[in-house]
Each structure stands twice: as structure tokens, then as C-alpha cells.
Length: 350
Image (tube, rainbow, N blue to C red):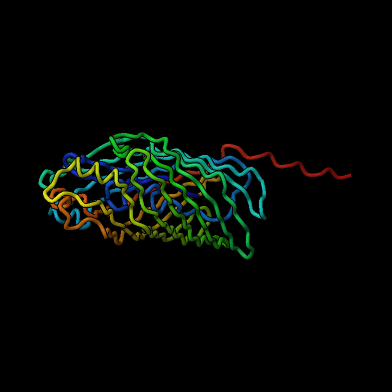
């Protein structure tokens, strides 16, 4: 399943103000955003569920610090946290298409973000909460390849209906643009094992207010768990990578030059990229009528690069240089059926 959302921080100080978006663990750049929290597909596989309508309740908290050239130059490391709660409806109508089982998903996330005040760094801190963009995945196909192997292909989209704020629409939980998210999943599920590589890709459209376009982002959530009776345990890992650079518009550059007058002027804004790798562990328990999964991960490394180092803007506002977040994620998921069709009665003997 594709999962919304996390919290990325992009900020500048002074006339640019502070902008914190909905996804930490991504480059902190003006206008750049990460829609889906890395690792939210842990424990999920490409094997289909029985027909029915399912409810999924997710909660997580991301505790992080800001790192990278944009943060190091200040000599101070702002810290923060980002809790989120998301409700999902997952529908398996019992249909087959192209030899696969069809399903659809809709998710409704709510999040909060708080970053501490660091006066010595010239960073005033920030705090907000609101509704993030709704995620709708109308097409999910899952194939049984035999011998325990399964594959999934699907596509979803984030709709810009979240809480929008600020002149550029990026100072609250929502994002004023669409994000298309295709996925490809490969699993080996047999004898209690779940070995899954859940890959997905974020393609962002242009920000409807600033005309700023965030770069494309690749995710890989990896699960290797074993079931023992009602318990499931095992290691998990994720890798996330911004593949393409952000694309500011001429209008955005003009706005930035007017908002932040600096000696020498601002000659274009070149947002950088980021990548991160995390390791952790997962534990789950099947109650029969519901299944609970918890996990924790720690970012082994997180890097931001290719930003605006050395420009007049970063001399005045260091946080506009490449900056990213690094920390721990604590996560819990509860899944349970809202409705399953009645089994067909056995044929009567004559």
C-alpha cells in the first residue's frame, strides 16, 4: 500500500519566513516536499487480502535533528518532532483483471510538526498542525505468480485538498499541487515468511501558487519477517532518494530576490537533492479480528547535497542551503475488516 505522509521542512529566515512541510527525512529546500513517509509500507506484501472492506489506522512519530551544510554553518542543530495519524479504507471487491486481484485504497492523513527555537542560529522555530493531502489509489493489481511469489502494480495520486497556508501555500500541512505515485511490489510469502521489496515513485506537478516544481523521489521499503503462531517479527529497512532537482520558475526567483534583498543579488535558486537509509525492527500480533503491527527505525545516514552553498542568499540565510533531517521513527498500525461478504452456502446433498 502506498502511504501518506511525513513531514519535510523547507525554510528560510527573515522576509522569506519559515516553511515546514509535511515530511521530514527529505531535503530542507524552498518549496521542496516529500509526500509519503519512508517505511510506511513495512510489513505489507503483494499478496491480496480476502474480499471485503478494511479499515487501517496508522500513527507514527518522527523525532529528528536537522543536518547538512545549511545546518552545520550555524553551529547549532535544531531538533523537532512530527506525529501523524492516518485513516485508510482498503477495498477488495473480489474482481479479477488481467489475471490479477483488483483493489482500491483511500487515505486521509492528519499531522503536526514542531521544530525548536534556536536563537543563536537565527532560527525562530515553527509549529503547526493540519490535514495533509488526501491520497487515492483507484488501481491496484496483485498477481499470484506461484510458489509463494506475488507481484503488485498500481498508481495513486495525492489531491491538493489539505490545509494550505502562507503566500506560497507551503506553511501548513497541505501541499498546493498534485503528486502521482506509481508502485511496483515483489514478495515471497510462504511458510510464515514475508520477504518484500515495496518500491514507489513520487512525481510532483507544479505548485499552484509559486510555480515551483519539486523533484522526483524514489522509495524502497524492505521487509523480511517470519510468523511464529500469532506473532510476526523481523528486520526492516528503507532507502529514499530524490532523483531529480527541484525546478524553480522565473517568477519564483523574482519573488525570492524581492523578498530577500542581499548584497550581490540572488542569481537563481538551485535547490539540491537528498537521500537517506534507515534500519529497524518490526513486531506484529494477530488478534483474529484485527492485526497490530509496530516498528521503529533509525536513519543510518541522511545526506543533502547540490544546493546553494556559497551564494549571497546562504550567507545571509544559511538554512536555504541544503539541509535534511535525521532521526528515529516510531510507528503503529491496526488493520481490521469493516465488512466481509457472507460465504456461499455449501450445496445440498441430494
